[in-house]
Every structure is written in structure tokens, then in C-alpha cells.
Image (tube, rainbow, N blue to C red; front, side, top):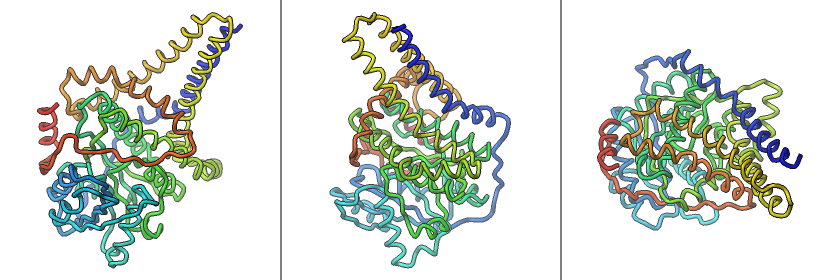
Amino acid sequence: MPELIPKIINWSIISAFVICFSYQAIYFFVRYKRKIAIPSTDRKGRYAVLIAARNEENVIGGLIDSIYAQNYPKDLLDIYVVADNCTDRTENIVRWKGVSCYVRHNREKIGKGYALEYLLERLAEEGKLARYDGYFIFDADNILAKNYVEEMNRVFCAGYQVVTSYRNSRNFGANWISFGYGLWFLHEAEFLNKGRMTYGSSCMVSGTGYLISSDIIVRNNGWKHFLLTEDIEFTADCILHDVKIGYCPTAEFFDEQPTRLIDSWNQRIRWVKGYYQVFGKYGGALVKKLLRERKFSCYDMLMGYLPAFVLTAAASLIGISELVIMLFTSHDPGFILFSISMFFLNTFMAMFLLGTYTMVTQWKKIAVNPARKLLYLLCFPFYMYTYFPIAIAAMKPRVEWKPVRHGQERTARTLRGAAGWKEHLLRNH
């Protein structure tokens, strides 16, 4: 009987994961049965590019160059940067590039949300908000494919008030950590968001690389999302206001990922804490809207983020408890160790299969040599395992924003199409 308890607990946790995420099988099948049909358009929107940068002297120039290189009318695309609490040469580089730069110093209100609020307030004061149809949001370490704005404009003109894009990685093959990030972001883009778009549900914004209609900025009186994950908060707010977020699979940008475990830990603990904050603030309203209007996007939002990390934290705490109990009882410790090992083996295989499917379907998009792809694929489940302690650590009352330094591989060249950028990556990785 004692041996039955850990077995029941472990299978209960696995069953909970299956129950929470089995609905995503819809995205797997629908993307092969339907196609995303976005009509061509002659309409050209006028857009502002908003960039919040904090000590980004190593990378901000590359992003600006890639925006200048867009095959989109230059007079319809303006760039605005907020140098947020910078202590380096970010402001100087931005101005040298001929870009408008606004300097912000505030040690109390720290985070991307506050920087965007400040930037939009300055544009409003200068009477510039009425000029634009929409606003692109990028991080300073991003690089855009040459046709990025053109492709996003096409989806935007199809009637979507918010459009997110295909998030690739500029340092995919640096090590197993950056590879883990990159593979997961491709999964989010081409499995989850493409599935949502094809199914007809709302997609979800993830971090950076998205376009917002000026109507939403006006409705919100600027930017109003200040939680640790302002992107997830923005997504929840859109769903509650019946704003369907679109996805553009042909608009590709490259994002730099952390390569040090300490930087990754600090970043992802902030993300997970932010997920908890979002559901503390919006969870009740999402449940009410789900029950009242049967909105699938509400269910997707509720299941897509919170259960994974709550279950991950629960599984971690239960596993630790089982080990402690094993030490103070006469039960067979071998069986409990076997039970815990089987749990990790099952989750390893699930993560490995997910990673394999993503890598095979996106093989040509991953700018890493084949041998390294296969090696890092074996490490992908271990990258996902690091979320176990992160999910627990994020439960502490206060998690502060900590900077992640970009530009380990200093790049200041203009992007000349996605293919040219990938060739550069393959030569260096």
C-alpha cells in the first residue's frame, strides 16, 4: 500500500498535464487541414517603431540598420527609442543613427511597461500619435528580415488590430541554453500561434515583435500594462476586450537569447512570476467571460500559461516531499526513487518528442549545423527541467527585474534578407 501512494501521485500529475494541454492537439491537426489565407493589399499603413532600450549599446545599432533596410516606404516608417536608465552609450549611438531618442531616468518604476508608457506620453505631448496607423514593439537586440514590415502590414490590413510574428534566434547555436530558448519560441510561433490563427482563435503576444493598432493605444490612453510580463498582460487584456490577435508566419525577426544559466534563471523567474501576477489580476475575469460567452481564447489563455507552472511547482514539491518521507520511514527507498525516475523519464520523452517535432518541421529555419542541432536537441528536456526549481522560486513574494546583457556576439551589420543572416549565423556556429 505505501508503494501505491507515490505511483498515484505521479500519475495524477501526469494526467493533470494531459487534461490541461490535450486541447492543443487541435492546433496540430488544423494546421494540416487548413491554410492561413491573407489577401494581398495595396494599402500601406504608416507605422511608428517603439524600442525600449536599457544599456544596449552592443545591439541597438543592428536593429536600427535592419529597420532602415526594410523594403517598405521609408516615409511611412518612423523609429523612436527610449533610453531607459542607461549608463552606457545607447543614447549616443541612437542619435548618431539619426533616430529620435528620449531619455528616461526613474529608479522606482522599472520595467519595459513603464518605458513604453513614458515614450508614448512624449509622443502624445508632441502631437505625433495621430500620425500613425499602428505601433511596432521591438527589443533592442532584435534584427528584422528585410520583408518584415511589408508582411506584417498585409496581415494588419486584413483587419487584425494586433499582429505577432515569427520569432527566430540570432544565436540559436551558441549553447544548449540559447538553443532551448530558440526551439521553444519556434514551437510557440509555428505550432501554437499558427494553430490558433488557422483555427480562428486569438493568438498570443510573446515578448517582442508585434504590431498594435493606434485604436488600442487611444483606447488605453497610451500603455497601461506594468506587470513583470507586460506582453502576457497585454494579451489577456486584448482577449477580455474581444481583440483577436493575428499571426504573420512570413514576418521573421531574430532575437538574442541568454547563454549563461544565471542570466536565464533571472529572466525566466521574472517571466514565471509575471504569469502568476497576470492570473492574479485577470484570472477571475477570464473565467467569468469563459463561462458567460464560451470564448475558446479565454480557455486557451487560462490553460496556456498558469497550469504548466503551478503543476511544475507542485510536481517539484511533491518529489522533494517523497524523498524526505523516504528518509524518515521504513518504506522501500528503491521503489520511491524508481517512481520519481519514471516520472522524469516520462516527462523527458514528452519534451524530447515536442522538441523533435518542432526541429524537424522548422529544420531550415534553425541556423545551426546538423550535428549541433541533434546534440542540443538531447539537451532540450534538461532546459525544460530547469523550470521545476524556477516555478518554485517564482512563488516568493517579490521578484525584481534584472537586466540581461546582450551583445556577447557584437553585431552591427545591416540585415540583407533572412537568408543572408542565416548564412552569417551558420558560418559562426
